[in-house]
Length: 269
Image 1 (cartoon, one colour):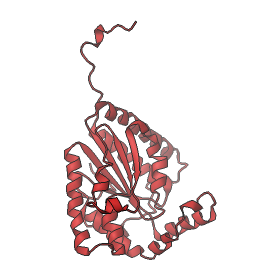
Image 2 (spheres, rainbow, N blue to C red; image 1 turned 90 degrees about the vertical axis):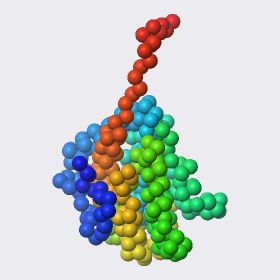
Image 3 (cartoon, rainbow, N blue to C red; image 1 turned 135 degrees about the vertical axis):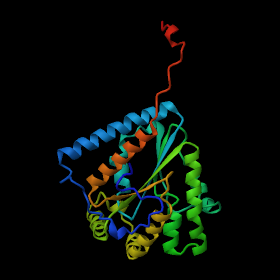
Image 4 (tube, rainbow, N blue to C red; image 1 turned 180 degrees about the vertical axis):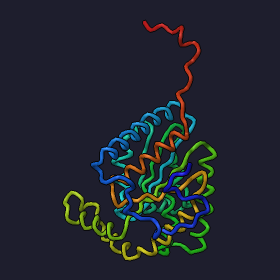
């Protein structure tokens, strides 16, 4: 059964219809049911990752997108911490280098796709090339519009070769973003995260929402679905992401390889 936050393939997304403040039937992060479910899902993720690594036949790519201060770093810290770094890597995609710009827009992305048995987490991704470049006018409309098809084909290539792709849009309100940016300014331990450019980007909120709506609508596919995660409440965001990851890995159903038939004759002296 499809997850309630999954964007169905072909569905036209209007983010105004998604409540970023939604937190389901749970009252707060201190709700015992929240604590127990999160712990259970993270345990499942840890156990299934070990099977995935041992099996060595499948891979998982996790993509995190969202506005500034949406909680991408926080999700990695609080959810992905359950993953064993032996078979998991996190990549943060920033402004492309001159070498990366000399290649096609997917060149720098494909290098970091997970190997079989591994999990990769992308903090931002190839979707910047249909969102940021669109809003800032860095390339022509004809060019960025053509990239939706390239993205779907790229993700299909990964899927056809055993990589499951799961994509999270962390959905916060404009008011919540203001509160979080203000918190960064007020906290000496978070000031390093503040960038004056964030304020200029914030002025183009509606343009970014329109760009995200197109990306979510045109690039949620059976092989690489998008999930719109209510993210005003950090604890609920973590709960949803952990739940979807556990469900995804269960669906992948990795298995420990069968023991070699001659192991019964092995004697350790």
